Length: 110
Image (tube, rainbow, N blue to C red):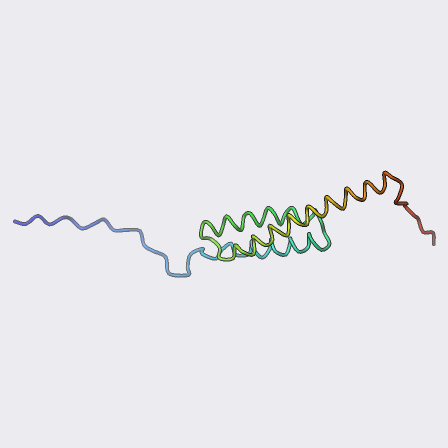
């Protein structure tokens, strides 16, 4: 009699290709990019800081294999940092101008 090993136990069924969540978090990169651009152009802190947070989440999702556009998240992250730095710099310069009296508040009467 020959010793034949028993067959291996059945493995869990594999999902169909494309039926999983491989691209379920791709919107994070796009959102981060849009927030970073808005923070740089017009909204300052209000969108630059969320761009940093969402960009970091996008990079994590790419590392976990849940997203394929982590580069957009990286760009949004960088733009968020630049927007935050420029906002802080602008606030400091504006504060210095007000403190030294170089900037006057004017009111217009109609």
